[in-house]
Image 1 (cartoon, rainbow, N blue to C red):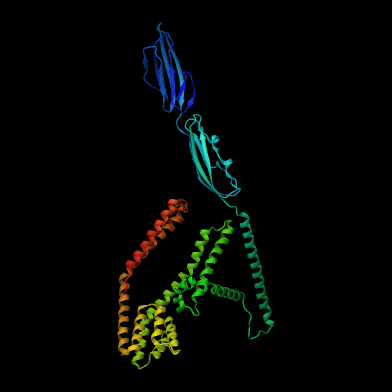
Image 2 (image 1 turned 90 degrees about the vertical axis):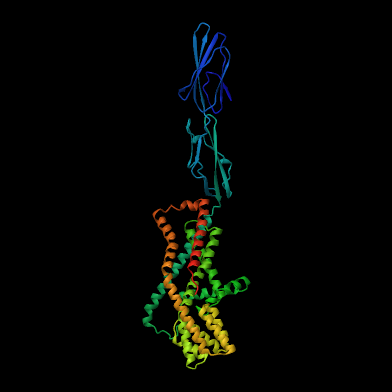
Length: 495
């Protein structure tokens, strides 16, 4: 509490105690407290005793004391006081900044300070900016403080993340990219000119029947294959890579001369290509890739080839599944005509087209080379992994070991496969509308997000700039993926 005399005029943020001591001639007195222009009721003191008047709340006060002496003469004195307990308002527009080492910081940009009584206080803002070292990477805390005339103080903090200045490194990379592009352009121009010259002089020359020249793209492809071979030899030494490659052996039925280790090498190379492409784009924009970004890009590149191969494998498997009934029918007819298993397989490989023909040709070759019938068909079953192949492989394995009427067995297999096929078609017809609704419900949120993003580009920006927004995105993705899995499980009908 601050003690002031009656005639004091001062702004303070403390309670004010005004002590009035009347003179000996005063017989009585009264005082009126006026706050913010509103007068209060007079307070009478019918004696010559001292009064202590306390002012506590924020506001502008006027104190009037009227004294009456023994002769009945009145004397009025006044005092003006101002109490300000409201702290100034300090506003920092951007509390998190990111700068490079040795970069200047405009620490007052977007910072405002004001007070109800004193108005704009931006010039009174004080910081610890001179104590901070912006030449060393790390998180720096700028402390802002501002005081009003009454002594009320407000403090706030802003955080500056200082990152290493890689401008020189980026410029070096950019220069390297420009040189590589320039060299490639010159090489390409020379190559095109040489082709044009070759065409002009070809009229007057006699070409050899054996042209051993290799084109530029063939050379690049041979270099790529050579690199893949070297990388495959290196990866094959790892037991982890060998174990991972086993699940990709199923793609042997799609591609000729397929090797699962080579497939792993292509996945690794594709991961690095993704990193290289984005690195070039970032360098053009004068930015570098972070460790997390490199890891995400490598994972995307590593598994993107799986999607392509999985789609091809699904199409290949579907075609074989569709043609299996025809293959079983042809084999059954061949058995009825008195032909052997090898001859029946040969009939299927010649009569049918597409993947089923290639598979049965492979079975025919394996049996011709001395592999048992049941083993050849077991390998076919392991490659394709469909129920029709399981029926065929199991039946031939039993017949090969125990004997029996192969025509009756194949009649049963043909009938079962036909009924299963018929049931599948009926189920497809019955569930087609439900599947359409499911796909619509799955893709509507994505389409909705795309349209909102086109209409208002910054609409979803708070979700990516706020930690809470990132958590919400993660929760939404988990719910969305769970929804897709549950719906697919419900809609999936096994026959």
